[in-house]
Length: 105
Image (cartoon, rainbow, N blue to C red; front, side, top):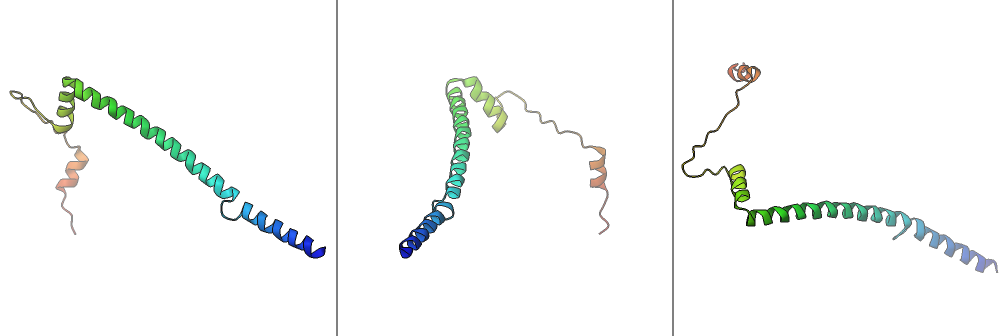
């Protein structure tokens, strides 16, 4: 009888080890659930970005003015007959002094 009780105690310890510390333990399941929830949130953000990009694509395909605006902003395109002016901001005095002062090294 003592041998049977010892076997049961050993089996209980083995099963408890697997539940708490072994493969597919509670801690691992919680960690995986946290990763799943993070991935779900990331997927939601990516789905929103995809929806915005699809809306922009639809506008670019149907609205010529939108297409022209994007071409001007991103590609710097100019219509024929127009003159393109590029305005370069003035340098601040500290930047001018740093450029003019030679390095003694």
